[in-house]
Amino acid sequence: MPVKLVETLTECLALAQSDSHEAQRTALRTLASLTKVSPQNRNILAQIDGAIPTFVALARTSSTIQKLSLCILFNLSLNNDLKRLLAEMETIHHLNSIILAPTSSDSGKFAASLICSLAMLDKNKAGFGVAGTIQALVKILGEPRCPASHHILSSLSELVQFHGNCTLAIWAGAVPVLIQIVESADGEDLAGTSLAVLGLLVRYDEGMKEIKNIEGIVSLLVDVLGRRCMLSKEGMLQGCQSSHPYWLIFQSEAQLKPEKKQVN
Image (cartoon, rainbow, N blue to C red; front, side, top):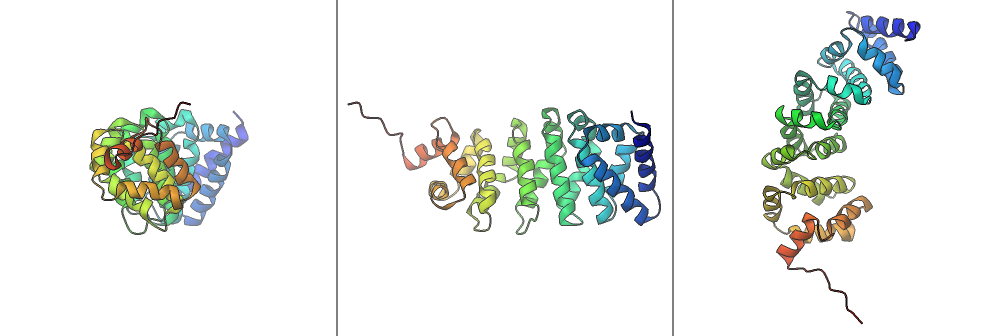
């Protein structure tokens, strides 16, 4: 372990806890830079006693300090062996609170990105469901203006790959919220991810029932093929496979059947 590097990281960690906001910002910026591209630096920092709890605590402070602390935590989460360590229930609850009431748009984006990164470890997915993260993500997505929509959707997409989280998302009202994003003229670049999440939700009876209750759902899905962005079209084309839930909607609601090939 490089002695000089350890000394630098330890010194920055100490300064990050000082009473001087300028010293805190400088130290946190240095740590964010050192952990941005180096897996080794992340592991060394995480091993310093009290490092992770310090960043979690600082993520509860002013917007600039919060943003930098979340940035460092996100950088640490890029190391797979640190994902489990970072996903403490207290941390998850705090991330939920930031999602629901961010001090800045950047803080909301970093919190959502951190959730997404931690959720990539399958063992962490259930914990987010228990902590109420699914409900928080759906709630903020349903608000008129959500500057972190891309990041929130990515987090939700990762979390609903776990069956239990799909159920929670459906109960939280995710289906109409996602349909609203697909319909929105301002959400062209978000439509593909929304459709992908819907595709996961309608694998289950509750999700299928919810989406079939949406008036004009078949017309909307067909419309995606006609005028939406390429990402949305790819999502729909995947959905038109005979084994995909979207195809079941077409068949049951529009009485469309796969065309039989003529044999000459």
